[in-house]
Image (cartoon, rainbow, N blue to C red; front, side, top):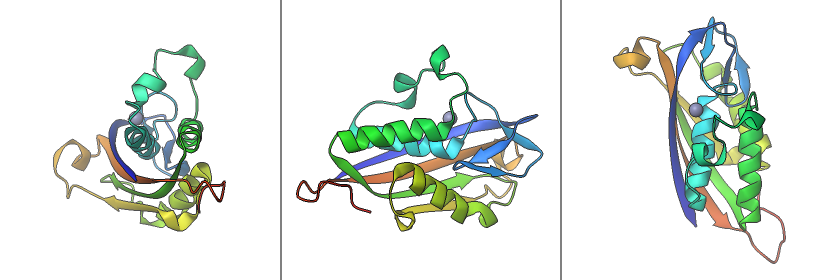
Length: 166
Ligand SMILES: [Zn+2]
């Protein structure tokens, strides 16, 4: 077994679409940053790299690399998921929390779980996404940004079965 954790935060700015967990969410602002600013997928990707013992997102996908300009966060997650499989592991489960004051994310959590599971090529019940606020406290409570935290567990793939579980 291998465990990994990841955390990320991005500023909310006008003129950007809000994408969380690979799902477009109606809101008047979106997350700044490289690619689509998908803070949830970045936290999960970081957790997977951590579980593999392979450093962080910036090492593998530097924002200075012009070849990566505009790349979707789901594509980055898919590439790291392929690294997980190539290293002989399967994703046992993902648990993640999005910290946001607004918008209300509860109606979108199931869609995020399905999209993340699809990108990781695992069953949807292995992915759990939660949402919370800071009860108005701090920068996130003032709506200046959104943060996310994720934990992943990897298990060795069963060599006798030849394919990842899930
Ligand atoms: Zn990020």
